[in-house]
Amino acid sequence: MELARPAPPPLVPPTLPRLLTARSIPDAERIADLEDELVRVRPGLFTTTDPASPVAIAQRDVLLARIAAARAHLDSEYWFSLDSAAALHGLWTYRLSRRVHLTQLYPPQVRREDDSWDHRFHLTRHWTALPLRDRTLVNGVPVTTIERTAADCARLLSLPAALVVMDCALHHRADRELIARIIDESRGKRGVVQARRVLSLADAGSESPGESLTRLAVIDCGLPRPSTQIPVETTLGTKWIDLGWEEPKVGIEFDGEVKYTDLADGDPDAVRRRERERHEAIEAEGWNLVRNAWPDIDAPHGFDVRVRRAIAGRWRLLPDRDD
Image (spheres, rainbow, N blue to C red):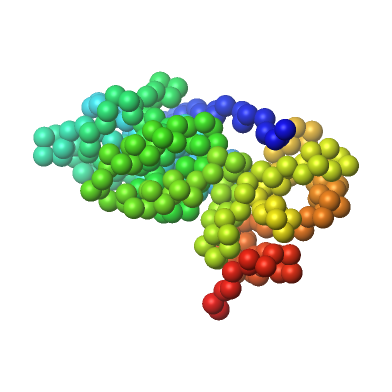
């Protein structure tokens, strides 16, 4: 019987942060105390961030603050969209935009807010028909549905950023057929060709942005598309490899910092020890594991070489590479 991974936990949408004004900060000395934590959302309006947070989390928190600021001043019908919607749903994001994106139904010649207001709030408006099917609320905030969000991101974000959002949407049981239908309904608009490619590359088995980007790097360097979440029976029980190829028994494991820092028991050393034992148990079953991390995403050539060396001699179908 084929083993199946447990269902992923439900998405947890983040809460919009509380905003601070100059009046709410008692005095200049207090502002100095908060200097490392304060981020200006717009003139006279601030949010706080945790200086110890990873860069991606800090960027998300600032975007959420800008969403909160825009929402407090918008008085027309709108739905947050693109990666702003992805952040509000709690979907993974990659290289998150600094701008707030929202969709409205009416064209700018019918009604147009002051451009300087949009500039102050880092706001970009998209004017298009938005069926009721594609509208929802998340914690009371109007936002495009997960399927519409994934389709829009697939069209308009960079391919890596779009794939991260799409993988997460599918991982959390988004309707792939509905996403394909929404993309088809966008025929004639910018980015449809890319959107179809993103959907074809997407894999619900991905369990993190790093795994999604690793899979894309593997495909882009000319290797066959890897499978995701491969079960391996070991002396320690069933263990799962992030991605790889079963025929040559070559697997790839992505090491993200969350694996060692976001811990229930608060003991990174214990987690590293268990991960080392897991690695050794999988390799004892004849697997060759290649590990990669965020630096390999930014500079994939060395990672490409390591994967090819791991496969060499195990798989006669290894494609040639033109260097």
